[in-house]
Length: 226
Length: 226
Image (cartoon, rainbow over all chains, first blue to last red; front, side, top):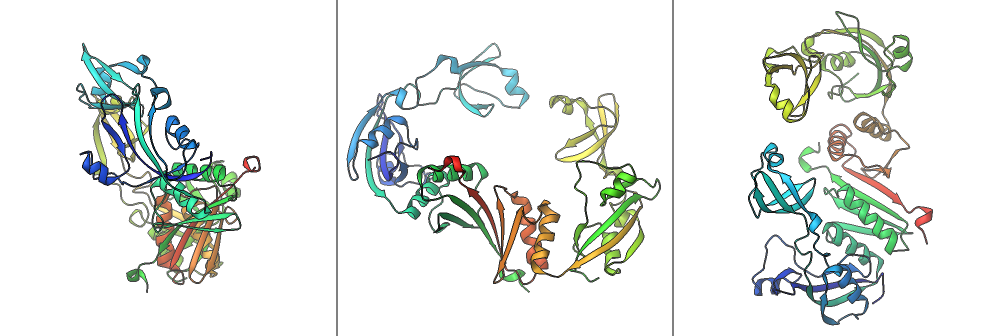
């Protein structure tokens, strides 16, 4: 593939050392492997090759693959979720949690200034919290397949919508005319941060589009008509 | 006028007892009377008569007026900002403010659970806060004029936009076709609460509209084109 190609991929991601699955796109495999989570929407994942939609090691591997190809790739921590950093382990006074009425216990996940960490220990009123990503320092093994490539502009728009907002065709509708794409939703508002990411990605990776219009439609209900 | 008429009005609102101006639509009068506030956008105010855009006493008065007419009206508290209620004065432990690092002093405005109140006194760690509207219990005098009536559908849309979001024509653009109004802004997002109010008001007071579409347009900047 080439940088900028739009593809849909499927994968099983495992921690190399333990073989534990931390991410999987297929519901069937999730069930078979006993890691099925009813809150997850399974299915092939849209990726713009080389655009950082996936971790660097996987992105690089995709560039060397062809549509329909399946590969098992090993990824070192520095091309996955980074090395573990000792300086990401912080000592926080227990009083700071008490002030927010939070009762911390070892093993708890806590959020401090918007960053999530795990409580390692509590001693003499000091809480040791590890803010490293849970997969930091781990080598990973991905079994990845490029299921298809898409080249149609409208399908590319839907791929970007799916990636950033999980909106499927039908819930969001895209119309393209003269370099303008109109993305219409009914009664659904897309968060402003998400809109910004969608716009940035469209302008960067779909050269033929130079205007993006988000439209939300509201209809009068029958009972309120008179 | 009749209930549902769209008009633009100007007014000077005074507290009857003191003669103090608490609200005025004309910049010229504001300056002359020494109450000019540079943060306020002065100008005639859009009102749908009888729709609660203004206090009940003023709304009722408008129904009895004609376009171009000017009137001085007295409004009793129950048709203005309500009577003062003693049960809206609450005792709050000073520790509750300290916990939020707020240092309260008599006369301060404080926000508790999203409601603003004024600190009346602080005694033995207990803070007396008055959550009554500052104009509660006051009789008011309005000098009001109906400047013009509008009947054009598009102008009605702009009146509603101005009332709820202060967006002027040009910043927001309305297009109407087959009972659908499209409200387009460039790079500006209207808050979702505000959108809901705009939609509700359009459906209630502009019978010929049965769909509202909010569109936000994003354009690729020259430098990001390639």
